Image (cartoon, rainbow, N blue to C red; front, side, top):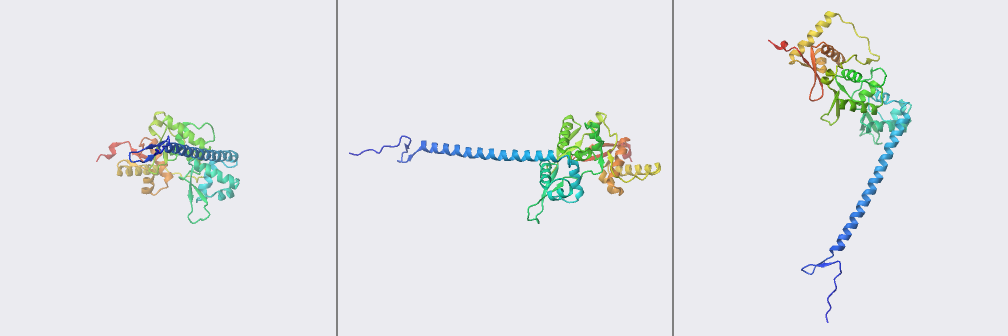
Length: 307
């Protein structure tokens, strides 16, 4: 007597006598998926814990060492060094320990104040740090709190309308993170507008129209420290200079920038900015922000273009 082979309860037979243990396979897949998810969750948890610990270490080192070297002084040191700086160099130039110097540089780099570079010829893998843009080392506003809208406008005007957290940190001598928060507040209020440039870096610019509407005009240019005395010019010389600037603007369809004036008249860029700011305050020029975020000065008198 023949006996039929008993099939497992959790298996099914196909038409061609192929047996597929569907339920067993499903159980194995579910178990594997649960295991994989468990491993992934554990890895994420460990990784997240390491990141939180590292950030906590950076923050505590930052708070502990700030009184010995402020963010403003640290940024001035990096720029004054004239080349990218390592943590070892920073420690030798300041009162920070090597570990504190490394942690402070990492903290500012993570918060966007500076950029990190690597020397391909340096086989030790040393990290070097540099400022993202030139910062004023001889400008300062009175040390008072809180920093007002008037201060923000003054600082921006001294930098052709542009302002950054690092710029504000150095000029106002406040912590970088505080400068960053302050700019965000003024972006929300409309006094400052922000956009991303072609390198996807965030750029902050003074909103000239909002500043005018609120009646906030530059009361004074931030004090220049250790600056050379200005050469006094007679009213006749100033009149000739104004006329030359206006003629140059007419030649360029009414538009001037500090860089263009600097190049055409062979004068320092700071002087070019000051000349255009003075003529703007007298109503000769209107100030606009280009699509690329640069300050431009436009002649207000259209009759100058009539032949």
